[in-house]
Image 1 (cartoon, rainbow, N blue to C red):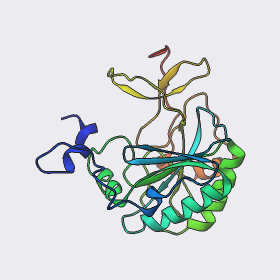
Image 2 (image 1 turned 90 degrees about the vertical axis):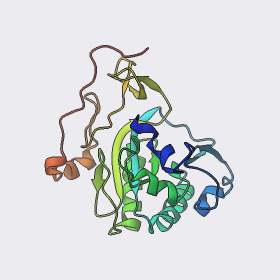
Image 3 (image 1 turned 120 degrees about the horizontal axis):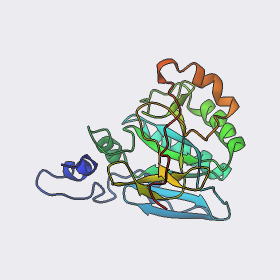
Image 4 (image 1 turned 180 degrees about the vertical axis):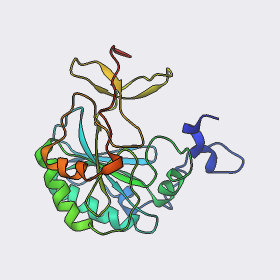
Length: 231
């Protein structure tokens, strides 16, 4: 069986179905209307919110927030309040039941324990958000996310990747989330078990001390293909 589809098998012992059945187990945040000046979309088990007037790059440094079952709703309270107050685009899992399913073995590419993803428009906003949210969430027990650089003693991780939905063929021919290299060619986004960056991406200076303390989690730059996998 293709491991990407395991979530759809865990919903019911007899039927293959979407992990999002109804809203009974959703976070209250999943049914809130978009704040004034914001756009809200649903993408299966994800809810996405972004300021209408705020432009975002197609890729960049993003913040991943992890959580344990039982703590997720409280973490979402903090994430929602901060993002709405500061105008920071974000996506989040619609309920703790989805977080539980995503912790299952082989449950897709999204790391188990990842509750929300935040999309700072630039490195200045990235640093500010990590500082502010770090103060609000530091010390909260949480899982580490494979492929992310953990920041401080809380649930915040960073990685470089896609903001916009773009795809290209991976080494096995399957469509994968993609980012563009310096020549504008789409290449697969890195989803390995350790933190790494594309060869052409510079690690922000304020993240260097954290990366140096990472020990075995440090990785060489992500290899990129010598020719485009798709146009």
